[in-house]
Image (cartoon, rainbow, N blue to C red; front, side, top):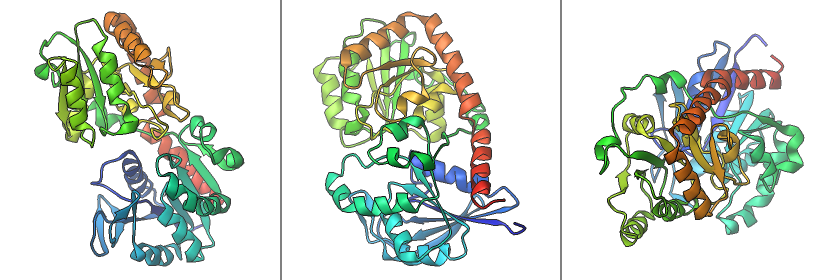
Length: 379
């Protein structure tokens, strides 16, 4: 093939919307576009209500379809259906990031005959009513897909849908721009906010929502009898409830709510913490990119053994500790063990850094993605 491979990246949203999938779509759109024989266009829905518009962000040709609002966490956009049909006409590959029911419908209605690659980020967990109606459309997408990308083996094994399509699945982990993370200005970001600057600093970042398990983390932290403090970055519907829980446990001097942190400050927080905790309780947490962001700075991770990809990222006994979800006693014991053993923290953290550099380095991941795309169009 002498001409360029034309790829249409499709997702619900795009930068500056924050989220793991949006970060990944931005990464794919930017990095694939740097190959001389690839042309990338990206189609998403705009946030909130409004008309369609196009823009160029960091070299990415981006179209944001007009929307009438969001329902069941999915945008409603008739413009998206029309744009998908038009933009896919000349595409060699349509790359759809799911779950995104509107994209599945757009594919069905478009008459598109080219290659379809699906990046499967998570099953639909919470919206059970939506899934009842969505199931036939999702089945169509998986039947239609030429290749299904998952970040870990756990995404396949823990899915309600993917085991049937295992023969189509390829493992492609999420990656970090490691150079970008290592070139920050390190500061005592958390220590400056601590009641005791010499404490062991435990860090969590994420949305304060049900499946993140922050309530379990606070309950666990209450049981830890050591000079340590907990720092929680993020906002969400449970914020006030969690603050009341901290007050009720009388540990307000040891638990710090940091709110939303801009990217640079968030990296400084990762770099300054001693232990990172991801206490998620439901497989809505499909991967946990935040684990990688802590691991790149050589921090041990405490995660949970979900039927998803979470425990495939940071490995128990090698880069951190893994406990049963919702088991606050196990979580407390894991925190206390790492707090009391600096050498173990150092050993696990060193392995964590090495794992990111060899298995989750963006440069390596993008090259693997390029090979997958090339194979699909027989380049």
